[in-house]
Image (cartoon, rainbow, N blue to C red):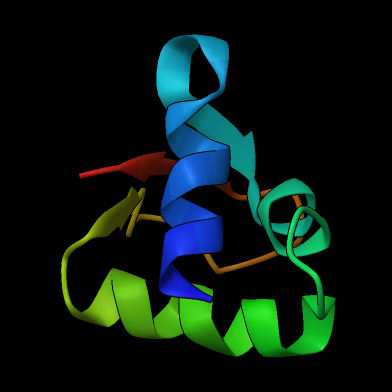
Length: 62
């Protein structure tokens, strides 16, 4: 799942996707959401910590 997420985000122009777009780009979106949070925790993905995590939150490769 990690590889699917990092490949999806690095393939985007500007390397920024919304939380829901990134989750939906995986084979199992519900598992993708959990893995996005894990990758955020491990600093492999970045997010603006000044606002709540939502489907519209922008995610980028760290």
